[in-house]
Amino acid sequence: MKKIKFPTAQTILIIIAGIVAILTWMIPSGKFDSLTYNKAENTFTKTSLNKTETLAASQETLDALNINIPIEKFTNGDIWKPIGIPNTYQKVEAKPQGFVAFIQSPIKGIIEAADIIFLVLFIGGLIGIMNHTGAFDAGISWLAHTLKGKEFLLIILVTLLIAIGGTTFGLAEETIAFYPILIPIFLAAKYDAMVALACIYLGSSIGTMCSTTNPFSAIIASDAAGINWTTGLTGRFIMLILGTLICTLYTLRYAKRVKNDPSKSVIYSQKEAIETMFGNTTNSTIKLSIRLKLILFIFAMCFIVMIYGVSQREWWFLEMTVVFFVGAIIIGFLAKIDEYTFVDTFVKGASDLLGVALIIGIARGITVLMEDGQISDTLLYYASNATNGMHKGVFINAMLYIYGGLSFFIPSSSGMAVLTMPIMSPLADGVGIGRELIVNTYQYGMGLFAFINPTGLILASLAIVKVGYDKWLKFVMPLVIILTVFTMLVLTITVYL
View: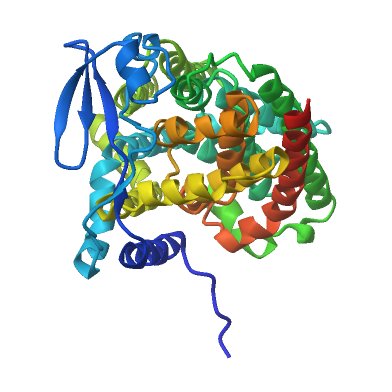
């Protein structure tokens, strides 16, 4: 009997899209009224079911709508997305998504996610050019020999740096670029590709889960809850340190076991295929010349410029894509690659990440089905009602799981913040706890589920190495359980302090 294989990432997402389409026939459609700030005219636009009205951009308007947020949060640009208005939920005419909508959803998702898809493709093109120059081979060979006997430092350094990026400016989608670069380095250090995946993905996940200054979660959620983003910062910082320590120790323990006995790897059956895919550069005969060092410097500068632009200049996918494109052209000149070879190599490099790009688009299509079926607000309404009358210790842990569940349908941290905070944060007042705990719980709930969320980034990340989702679950589930118990303990203690 032929062994049944676990489905591919694309198939998993298509199945989930089908389930979501079915849910739009079962869950009632509903909407909260929304409020949007119009910066050009300094007014609010209130959108109801069949009516749109312009309101004065004043604190009195917010108070009248039971929105406990300072007007300055809107006028200074902290809140730029439409927010939900509390106590305005209404059922609307059902809009179930049929078979046509289901088969259209991946295409719609790809169109909506075009910005990040182009970023991924251009990163693939740059990686193709770098591989052509031989700079990767020479650099990785040098690093493998330099770290000989101290390879564990690589795990600590990569996890820590990416966690810092996640907590400060929301380093998440950008990590897609790191896998093709770092996996050969970890293989050269006699680890498996899962160690590289763990360092990058766990680092990013724990960093964004415990966001401190991340404008896309901590700051926008605090603003939407009507509190200063520094409120609750200490708790998130302590969680960041302890959570990163737990993830690092977990990865180190697995890495040591694999290094001592490669057969202990959860992806041992793919060992040869992965090593062939990423090449064996440990014994590269290419000398790390001055030209190759300069090429590696330009390559590293692409990421430094990207990080600077995102964190300091409000860049987004367009600007990031341009950085990698310009970097590829400069490297092409330095390596003296002729025009025909450059284009051919760039296109082939981009095609290597086409599968990853499609996964991102298909995942976005699931969100499209939710929005078109108008069930997101209904799920939020039921979730907010589910906590009525709870004791504060039970309440805060229930919120953890509610946010984890909602993040399956709304994987965007900023989208979740502006949609839920105006409705969820007032619930804290009723049970006698600070609203900052709702902000923290929103981050922890989304962050914990992000470790395994198939509608998030994990399937795209796994696709780069062609590692199955089942193998990832086998590796990461013990860690998720440890972190969940730890987070519940911390939250329970916090509400009584």
